[in-house]
Image (cartoon, rainbow, N blue to C red):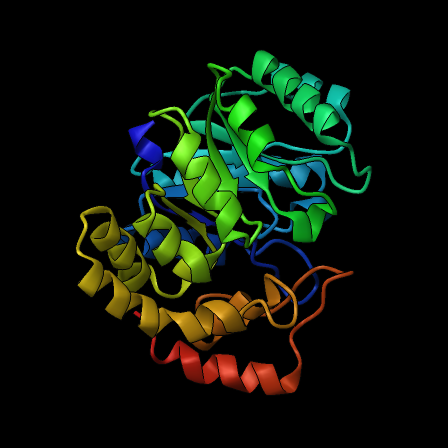
Length: 291
């Protein structure tokens, strides 16, 4: 899966003030990402506020992104949930045209044990017509997918990568040390992307890349090439923003920075809310350091 080595952007879904989808802004952001050197695009992940989109709206978002992308970058689709049977049925009906892989989050709310997580992903991988990327994000799901669990799942022929957002570098390094050679470890934490890539990771699925496509994608490219001096410089340019955008909920933070660049509005759908005034001012200043 060489298409997944580099920088993927977990695309936002822009909204108008009435909460309807702003397709014109979405098209602008796709074009900006392509021009900035992004490797691939991820649709309908957490950052895309997929939890508050209807099935019809999700189909419209996919259609909009595919049209704007026009086959230029690989596309990854978020397909996950906490009902194993429902996710499997969704995958069986999935139109795979134009898609490279699916990203599937570890089951949330139910808090399954590790055996339950393994069963869940094996069922998904068996049913999926596309390669599967695991997604471990304990801060959102309420449970951690351990290194041992991810390494066991890495042996499934249709599970090709993991997006690791645990923030636990010991766990990440354990996976990197023991994984199959062709299994990719993708950072799910923007601020940790440099060290994860330096330790052998394959890049990132990023939020901050929305606003720093050239700098952040360049950082990942430099790290993958072993130019850690250049990568560290770019990492330090982006670091404050990469942390700040998550300080009062996501994707409210990145939408504020994009708004300062006139790329979209700041509206998020409830129960999410716009960032507080102090953070808003900080992010707007940081937006002017971005390229």
